[in-house]
Each structure stands twice: as structure tokens, then as C-alpha cells.
Length: 350
Ligand SMILES: [Zn+2]
Image (cartoon, rainbow, N blue to C red; front, top):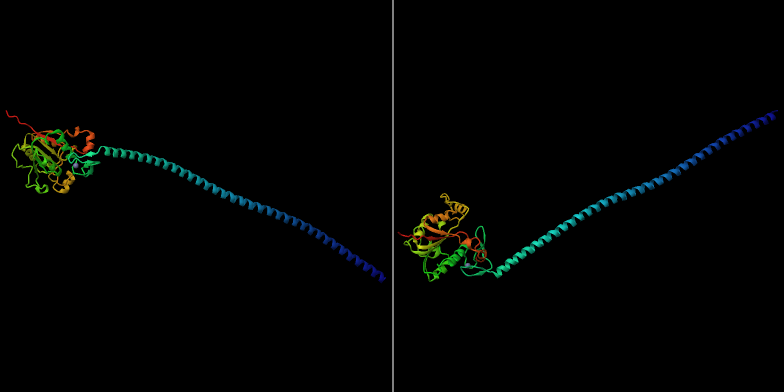
């Protein structure tokens, strides 16, 4: 019995263990299968992720590179546009400069032509000083403000000297006939001519004898000559220095012979109706400022001719207006304006 029991018990234990093993195995197998399945899924996911990630990165890199290129291109295009714009501007500037240059060249050619004409005409038609007979290309500028064609480079004559000398030569017989001549402040070039002329009995005079190498002083306001002494008086730029100019004009009239003549010149401002004279202008500075020269005592206006006529003179002053332009150029008379040829009226006694 015991043996039987023992056998039954062993069999029961053995079965129970076997069953327990089997159950355990099945569960292990099942879990292993589940894990395998999970593992496969995970691997697939990993593969998928790797694949996705790789594609994504490549695209990202590619996009980034493309974007970089695009940005770079855009910047380059902008720079190229800027350069093109600058180039166009430069080309425009070059065109403008070319045009200006061509205009300048035209002006230079124009001026060269004018200068050539002037040069040609000055070579062919030399200027002539009627006083010293020099043939010159040009008279020199002179004065303040400068006057062109004014000063003879040879004898030092100015427009008024050449103009009045031409007048004496062409319109009077003073240089040919036997005459007695009174000359105030005698200019060297005139003194040279007049003193050597046999027909002229010549009296050079001035208030300041030393300046003109004269023996004695002569005051135009109080002449030490008898009435009716001279045939001709040359009195240029004297009266504006004299305190009593009306008295001086009277004296000129007095010492002239009947039918005698005086050539009288003063600096004159034609736009001034009345002579400007103010006793309070008593310093060289004030006189310079108001009269144009420090030793002038007044500034003559267009009433000057009346002052001469008041003393009895017949006055003509249209010589300058009758000089043709060719002679004006030839003799340098452009600024030669005011001179007064004064004849002493013949007084017919009844
Ligand atoms: Zn000269």
C-alpha cells in the first residue's frame, strides 16, 4: 500500500512539476514572442526615424545652402545693379564733360580767332602817336581806374595830348603861321615841338617854375602880360588846381589877341550838371575822395562851357565827335573827351 501510495504520490508530484514547467515555458515563450515583436517594431521605428532624420537633415542642409546661395546672389545682384547705376552716371558725366570740353574748345578757337584778328590788324595797321610819330602795336593802359589804349610808350603822351595835337594840326594854322604862344605847365613832348618851331614865339609858364625848369613863377590868376599879347594859349588841366578859376579864365581872355584862341581842357564829369566845389573839402584825402585827385579844388560838371562863355569866349567842343572810329583806334583816342576851343570874340567898335 505504501508503495502504491508512494508511486501515486510521486506520479502526482511529477505531473504537477511537469505541468508547472510547461505553464512556465508557455508564459516565457509568449513573453519572448511579445518582446521579439516589440523589438522588431522598435527597430522599424528606429530605422524609420533614422531614415526620416537623414532625409530631413539633408534637405535642411540643402535648403540652407540654397538659401545662402540665394542671399549671396541677391546681394551680388544688388551690388551689380549699384555698379551698373554708378557706371551709367559716370558715362553720363563723361558725356557732359565731353560736351563742355567741346564748348570750351569752341570758345578757345573763337578767342584765338579774335586775338589773331586783333594781332593781324595791329601788325598791318600799327597805332600811331601823332606827337612823337612812333608806330606801335598798342598804347599802354593808364590811370585809376585803368583806361586802355591811353599812354604812348615812347613819349608819354595821353589821349588828350594826342587829340589836341591832331586838332591843332588838322583844324588850325597854329603850327604854320607866325604866332605868339603861351603854354601852361608845359609837357616835355610839346615843349620840344613848340620851342623848336621857328614860326612860334614860345612862352612856357607855370606857378611852380622848378618843376618845369623855368626862370620865374607865373600865376594864371594874375598874368604879367599886357592885354592882347598872344595868338594862342594852351591850358590843359590847370584850372581845377586854381582857387579862383573864373579870374584865371578872365586873364586868359585878356591876354589873348582879338581873334586869338585858347585850347582849354579840364577833367570833367558830364553827368554832373553843376560844378561841385565845397570849401570844407580842405584836406588831400577829402579832395581825393570828392574830386578824384588830392590836389584838385573842384569837380567840373557840364556847366564848365558856360563859365568860359561868361568871360566872352566863343566855344566849340565838337572836334572829338567828328573823329571817325578808325582814327580813334589808330591814334588811341578812346577816352579822349572834353576839350574846349575858345575864340576871343572880335569886338567891333562903332
Ligand atoms: Zn608818343
